[in-house]
Image (cartoon, rainbow, N blue to C red; front, side):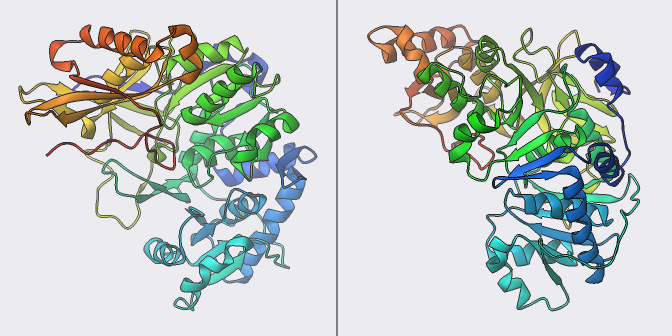
Length: 507
């Protein structure tokens, strides 16, 4: 067993933030207490910008209170689970705050679910009510016809009685979110108030200006990265959040809203950079200071290129099961390949190369699943990792993706891909097990070129790319070398969170 790394305080992050702002990063214990503080401290400030309307913190507090009253009048008591079906919208925000401050656990349902899946989730997670955005009311029909005992409440519902914010405890349930888990099977991870509160304040460490940003929401709120790092950290810091209703309008709205911070997956950061290079200007606007980038591997190339525009891009690492944030990289310019320093109130351990976690930020359990979330008190992430001498974390692959060669050697595709991705003209790559014409199992590589860099490769860019790829390949250990290289003319298939969908292993 390797040594346990125990992180008890955030002091190591203090040097990256002004002393005044660092002192303001306070732990309120629960999301209910956090919201009470925000509603009082930032009352007159704009909280949400959505559908050409601006909502102050005071207005959001008022609207959430009306929903809280509607829940109580429908007989929903503290401790109940309440499903929430909504797209990214103001309706989602006020409903989520209303549900959580009523002492209930919000079961966040992806807006794309069909009506039978909505019914199934209500049953599986034991929800006593469903709060829905009115535009999605048709998706409640199947459940309404079969669940007479369930409350169906519009996000626009307004109760008449005053119901104060429920004083939840850190161990009380806060939210259930879908996760692929370590097996790839979708499950519901139960996060308590203390875990979510830790995730929110973790999002405040590692950069100079923390409070009062203009932020944009382009990630789904049904994803932990969008909910905790984008929405809740924005509210916590008294920032204004512009909710992008249609991502096709993202760059038009950036010119209007002029955000100072963006939370995105690498594919969106890549798109913005490509457009900036194509049109000769910063498509994210001159006010942009920080990009928080995660949910998939971040190419070091992105860090260096955004630096040229005066934007600091910070890679990070997290899981739904860890309330999103495990680590963040405040020194991305110096260590662009790292996912950063571990956040406080958690312990990390490497066992046979796998990263294990435990701490305040971790899930309570998977709801309604027999799969155990914990093994001997530790959560097994399924991720392969290492630390450098300064304590910075690096993710080197997934255990389930390791390729076992005929000679018994193990190859981590992600670790090998990272070496090819260091080439500035390679946007993404995938190493996989294939079969050649003789039936022999081999390693193969497919790459997506970064089109904005092809001009520097001369008259025959594809030939130049191929030669460079073979140079990198020949520098690897003999058993890690690929036998076949293909340059793709289109992107890889991706998951809803923009992760590359890996090819199935050869039989």
